[in-house]
Length: 452
Image 1 (tube, rainbow, N blue to C red):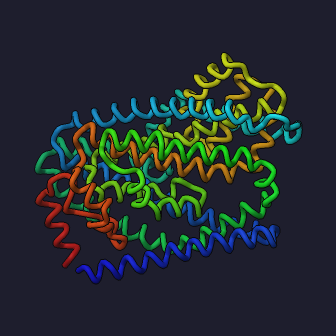
Image 2 (tube, rainbow, N blue to C red; image 1 turned 90 degrees about the horizontal axis):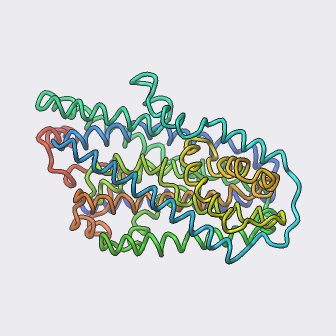
């Protein structure tokens, strides 16, 4: 058994080495042949779309199995309420950290910008087109039961999965055949996901080549100060703020957790999308010993509400633009913008390119004379989105462990064993049946059936 596990780990090891090679190749092609590089953009888009295709089924199966394995509906409500409260607090802290660092470094001071004004107005219109917070909440309810699994809306999939999970739970023993079927469906979904991940090097090459081909390396050099400040702030936030919180509450090392999720970080960097790692985050948190109910509620909700990296970006970019245009914000204006961004970052969470669009929408509503400066950020936004995505991902991984600890829905011994590499993650199936909530009879039968 150990030999077969070692073989499977070796195979996936080569896969992620291929991703690194593809990223380097993409940078070189984008730099040396920018025109040709942009033609490879569909490769990255297709791969990310393949991953997005699997997100709703993964969430649905995880939630239904998680709720079906517990008999107390109040547990789910407690996890959800605690998660939303935690997300609001951490987003506010992240926004505040962005303000502090932006005021200390003042990376935009001395610049003279006035071009690309239209870009800011277009992005602001995109943000306002999202309809605000109420329309965002309204869109959580899908038009049909099945459309939630086909539209790609994460919160719609979560909403329907909760309804189905509670309905199956209320059926009692009569719902066991349904759970057995969902367990088999989950195994099928993860098998498909594993096959898709073997296309990661191709997707990574296309995505990186297109980005470098469009923006060039000049944009990185010109605005390196802002990028460096933002990246360092994200590192301090993850390993400082989140790391200390994780250790003080759960006695879990942030360094071990980051090492455990190393392949997911690489996938995010390669595809410039945190969504590409969402299914694997669900599988790995489940494997680590957090109950499926907690994982299924916290992770998808966090992807819409727990945007720590985006929060840091919003305040730092706002200060940068104001200083670069020679119109710095007063302390009172900064606090007002902080409050506005807390709401705006949630209302536009479902917008494509939410970080940049929300920034433009916030400036238009709060300081419209600064909107023209968004054009400067556009050139390097894609590079900064890497740090945003990595920080958002880290925040959701930490949140899952913390909320699992607070609700007593995490196996502490299992967490230690996994993070100490004593229980390796099965890259071939991405599904475990022997941890978390006590195995139900139907789960045991399903395991035997699959292994037969």
